[in-house]
Length: 72
Image 1 (cartoon, helix red, strand yellow):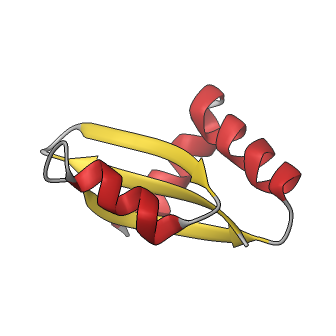
Image 2: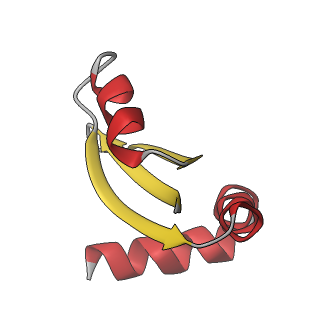
């Protein structure tokens, strides 16, 4: 499985990432701050996960829609 995930630190710091091993990657993030895992999506292929990550990072409308879903 491949994962796209969203982390939050503080009130306004968000991080969007992609990984093949979510638990390992989350542990790595926690070493450098008090990141909280807010959301993740699982994909069967790497290409689909990378496309989704890119859309969340570079298209504001995709990120705003996801933020509304997370905070609802």
